[in-house]
Length: 193
Image (cartoon, rainbow, N blue to C red; front, top):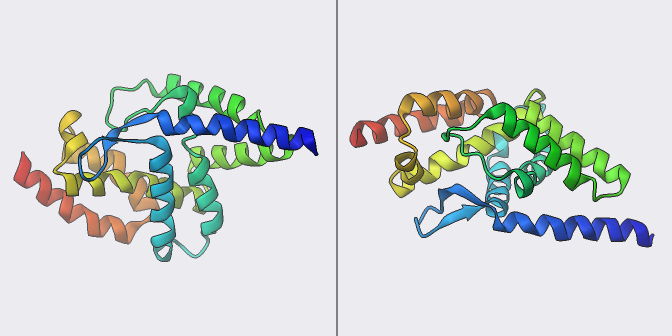
């Protein structure tokens, strides 16, 4: 029992480092950049609130677990801004190595289960993962609409980029939400370009 608890607590201590990983996006009030732990909490709340938008095959409890774990790899790999100039293959390799290390703190049964959820989220092929990935992509555009496009300005984001990098995954898991969001994005970019 002691070895199991030692491993679990070691993982939890290491996971605290996610609070120190700053993301490219700012809080809605523009006061500072959000950290990855805040992002994970907020998109879990998004998933819970918008669960009525999920398809019938989506298990919201599994989605919440995926969203809780999905960015833990940023402790080692850092944040890769969706609109940044990122070598995606190199980032995927860093994230996989981080997943090996971080989930490796846990007892074998939890390590295997958590890693499987993380891999499922990354693959975005199951109904749960498609919905989770949609939620992950949704939060930042909504924040940018409220904040005047803070990170969009920083990264010279265009509407076409948003439609491709955000619209494609959001449309897969949250089609009605994308239909609601797209006119707002178009109006924003019409006013600000």
